[in-house]
Image (cartoon, rainbow, N blue to C red):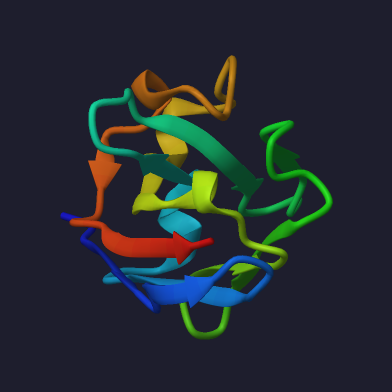
Length: 128
């Protein structure tokens, strides 16, 4: 049973940076893909960035492309989200998610239903 634990959230001013981490309790290779999602109060959870574990191919939401970078450390079984030029609209709870290897390639790697393993989330607050 894989568990995911996020860390690195906090409060920053607009224009600042944060780096989120997601620690995987088992080998990161047990996942086909992993992703970061976020959820603002009163809004649906939305995909931010995804990465395929073996190929490291990435996908980004239009709203964060060019500002956020997703990466993994295969030796440490961790996924990261480097966030730059943060804006108030980036505020929310950020979740990491994993799709098991045997479920294969996701149809849309930024959709919630593609993932069935979730962390508890870490809060990011960006003030103007």
